[in-house]
Image (cartoon, rainbow, N blue to C red; front, side, top):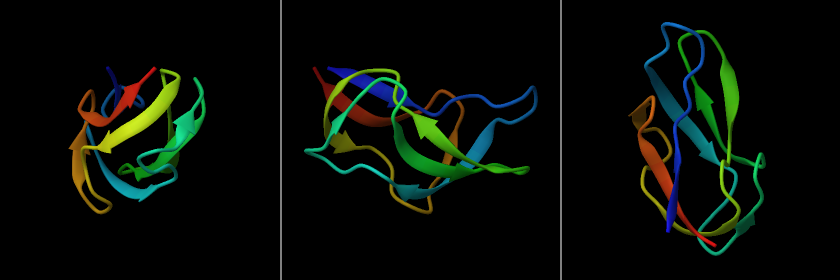
Length: 77
């Protein structure tokens, strides 16, 4: 099992808010496919999957504050 983690943007961005899930458990994802939308203190951006497979679990909810490097979803190959 692999995890998708919140990426780092810029030198100072450490926290962001997960605005919307673009994928749900049971959905398949490809590498570099958008899975969620987040808002940092400067911008809104998409979180891209770093792994390919099927999303099995969302680890955070829409509206949650998350940190850089925090796992946000689990994926099986």
